[in-house]
Length: 238
Image 1 (cartoon, rainbow, N blue to C red):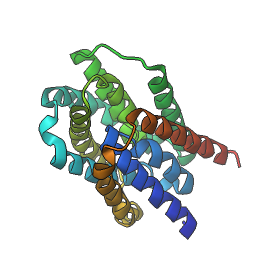
Image 2: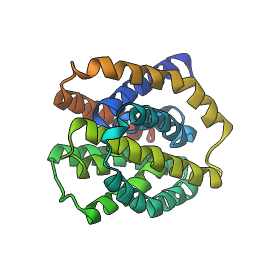
Image 3: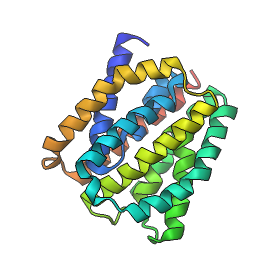
Image 4: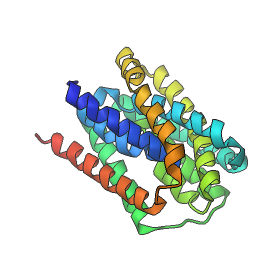
């Protein structure tokens, strides 16, 4: 990876981490297609490792607001999803995984823009956890299903509940991926190199939170995610 490419990735991770802390998701949505474009072998492990650190920071700051019961049911649903996602990583070649990342990004954006609000109940949370487990393990983008089912929660409660879910869920995905041999030394090296970018995003999120228009910030994140996914798809045909 060249210096300009790494600089682009560094900035993307910083912005994605800022969004993750501010609105509860965004790191995977932004960083996964960029990483898959620059080096597909780093997907999904690097984003999952970075997300574990970012969500851990959010839990340390706002963990008292979390809906433990809701996150628990979502994690029950995530268990079979993690196994399915790990199977996809093991079976699909890099090109197919790249298409999958792009498809998940575009589907997540489309659902968010439609403004669909599912009934908040045990069944919907379990199903969202299952889908998030498959998507999160295979592509590192597991936020959209949970954001959709928990969108009625208030800001701090939404962020802390999603962070608690992703902290445990990402750990589950990483353990399963490690068992399949998907975690390698290059992934760990790039995670260490990008950790300062994630830390910058976390540190900037707190002072900027009061100045950010959440609706506009969410829209900008969606536009950037679509652009990244589009570039990723085009790259597969070049």
